Length: 160
Image (cartoon, rainbow, N blue to C red):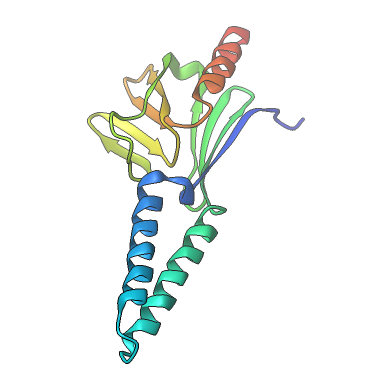
């Protein structure tokens, strides 16, 4: 029997506000520099092409997944676009809560980074699911649908 997917969320690399704002500011700077550069200089064309390339790159990154959060049967799965997936059995979770991911609006994309005794996962969104495991590990998973994921996890924990 195939496992039933109770929750699925795809985190995209291009929707991270920190990276998106850096790329857009640089592209705008290059386009403004192109329009204010003297016409006789050969550098002006390169600035235009670089600015347009950065804008195109921003658009392409909007559709590239960073990682996927899945809740299948009794397992929470964090599956990156490349690399090793992480499986957390729901029975190992002692406590789960929805918290703000960070006090800052701009955050870097991270996957399985140990920081301040927490394993962090983030690509987009302002909320996070804070999981305390029986082994003492803490996982902070940034996601857009943190409230819905918490409800699904608690539902699975009650059933098992």
